[in-house]
Image 1 (cartoon, helix red, strand yellow):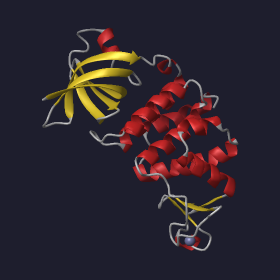
Image 2: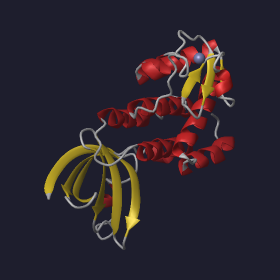
Image 3: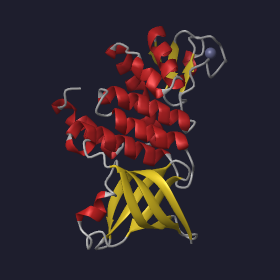
Image 4: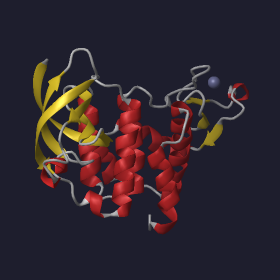
Length: 252
Ligand SMILES: [Zn+2]
C-alpha cells in the first residue's frame, strides 16, 4: 500500500457496514477516488463532518493495489461548504454537479479541470442563478470529457461556416440544411442560439458568467444539452429527477 495526501472535494458519501462510510472524492491530480472511512460513528459528528458532500478537504489515504476501494485514514476540512447544505436549491444543484461528475468519470483518471470545475460550481452556487450555472457546468464537464457536441461544421458533409443548422441528439453534432434528411429527428438551431452555444463550449466558465443572454436562448441550449446528456447516459440521473420535482417550488 502507498500513502497519499491530497486536497479533494467530496462528491458522494454512503454508509458502509455498521460504523463505516464509503466516500467518493475528486482530487486535482489523481482523479476520482473511492475510499472507506472506518469507525465514523464511534468518534461522533466531528469526524463525520469532513466527509459530507461538497466539503473541500485534505485527505490522507492508503492506496490498495488490488482494489479501487482505498482506506481513508485522516481528513482536515479546508472549506466545509455548510451554506450549500442549508438551502434546498443549492443542495439540489450541488448534488446534481456531484452526480454528473461521478457518472462521467472513471476512478484514477486525472482531470484537474474537473476538480476546478467542481470548486467553481460550489463557489458560484450562492452567487449565480443555479439553473444558469448548471447549464455551464454541464457544458464544461462535457468538454473536459471529450463529449462536447460538435458545432463547427456539418458532421455529414463538412460544410462550414454554418450560421444555423439542425442539432442531432443521437450524433451530438450539427447538420446542415442539405443533409438534414439523414437525421430526421434533428432539431432546428437558429443563429443566435448557435453563437451562444459555441461560445459556452469555448470560453472559460468565469468569462461565460460575465455575459448575460436572454433566457429564451439559454432555455433552448438547456433543452438540447439535457436531451443529449440523457441520451448519452442512457438514463435520467436521480439528482436531475429531484431537481425537476422541486422546480415548481423554487423561484428559478
Ligand atoms: Zn451537410
